[in-house]
Image (spheres, rainbow, N blue to C red):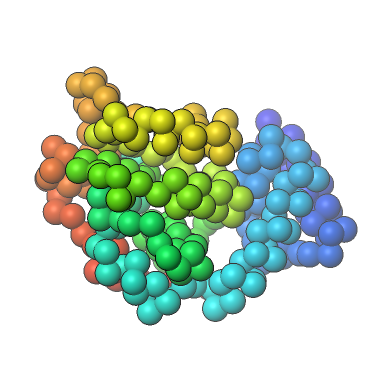
Length: 243
């Protein structure tokens, strides 16, 4: 298995060079995410890596999206960042009832990058390894028609799939109302098989029990049966990352 991985990594690095880019600043765990996302095909993984690299350089030129660039989105107070799950994954909570479709799509896209970057970075221990994953809790409680944003969901998932391959460990969806089922069906058409397999719609007692167990009581907010308080994304201060 290791030899196959090593061979695929070596071939991917060659392919990236042929495409006029470089993997020099990136460790094997980062490259492996692209290989896994492209079924260990070195050429397809290289193409995906180069596209991501170009996108990152143009869309996030400073290397991060600051709070000031997404202040309208942060003002909704809809994203929370808890500690780490039992398996060591950072846990993000999305309160969909506090969201309304954005008139400023560029700011919304920057916000998606901001929240994904910050959630992943919250699991760094001094520096990034490259294979960190996260758990997302999508809470649809008290959702009304004005909060429904299929376009926003699709944008979020497309960013996750194209630019954050293999970063999602699990997505738990809570309290899905009946009127959202058809919307979810439409959104699901845009999801790759690998993404769909990581999504759990919690709809019964057993599902709730497994959800609580996987997150862990210390990290899970009180309203979901845990012991933690909700912590707003903007209130989380991360330690500086080592180069």
